[in-house]
Image (cartoon, rainbow, N blue to C red; front, top):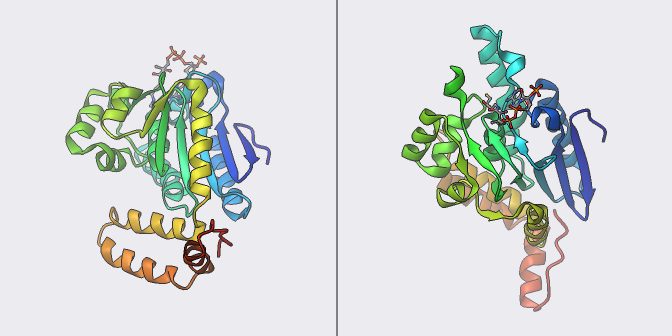
Length: 260
Ligand code: COA
């Protein structure tokens, strides 16, 4: 897969999407958003890919935000359309993907960059990472899901403070408030992503997709997450992975999940 602003690497079931506009601190312009979305579509269909990692190229930025130069002249309608299209094409798409997506935050994750990391299923960060939603300092608000996902992850009060101050927090602070799960030196970030991905890959990919849908149901308006859990739980009993997982346990051997 060849794209202008991203690199895609695949090895041993893990696909890395590396956002690669280092001169613009990997800022998300339209072309980059489309490229990430297209790459994920391809990786979703690729049965050899079990886990995705999204990271930024270089040592300075994960993603320093949406590309401000692209929308500075937008009208009200164009602004609304930008947020809607971006959310549908990329941010909601990642959140609802049935394959696990880890954000490896390797530097600045600001605005749309933090929103991208928050759309992933969980986040790990390097010690130099800095995170924030600085949109109100530009006269706008987060538009790629930030006002919704930040309170889900850190609680309403902390989210309000971060959004209102437009400030940045360190990786350690992000860990304390639950925004990232692990903080490691930069050189250990991708090895940690690989280690976590390998652990995830040992498990049933079919059950993983069901678990993602059930957890996400908790945050959907008008949806009873417990009912979704019951339905997804029941569906698992009809899968080959369930037969293999339970049989392997009873036979005291490691499961070899067929993924169906
Ligand atoms: N959109 C467009 N371009 C961006 C960008 C963004 N969100 N973030 C950084 N860039 C560009 C800069 O304009 C600069 O380009 P140039 O060399 O052509 O002038 C280049 O990336 C390097 O950034 P620079 O600001 O010189 O680096 P720095 O180390 O001094 O500061 C930041 C780093 C992250 C603090 C600063 O770039 C910044 O505040 N970026 C915007 C963050 C933001 O508000 N994001 C939310 C957008 S909704």
